[in-house]
Image (tube, rainbow, N blue to C red):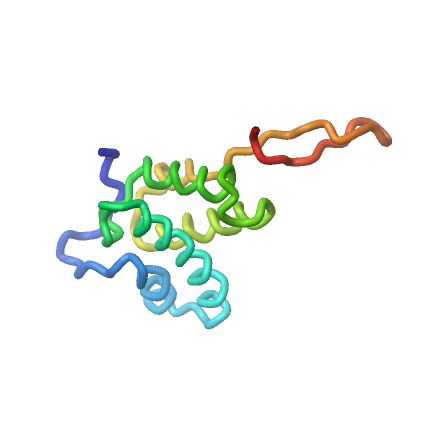
Length: 132
């Protein structure tokens, strides 16, 4: 089991995982644009966590291994479009950070990438591609 990432008080009532983005947006007083951008992408993460089997349904159960597996799911496994993966992962990081999760642990949540030479034109051009 990975280290506990949530720094929120034990007296704070738990928010169900699927409602966390909406809870953060409401608590911080963000507008409907934030809801449109963040909640849609947060639900991708929720579906991943809930589909993975006996994983916690509350945010307190999220750990570094969960985040690493989700990053691979989004990027390497192609669960979302290649260009969308960093946006989804960024939205998940933002929601977790604003919900009180450890900043260092969630900073490591990023899509694995490698760059591949595309061709020559005014020097070397590179294009981001999924790892093989």
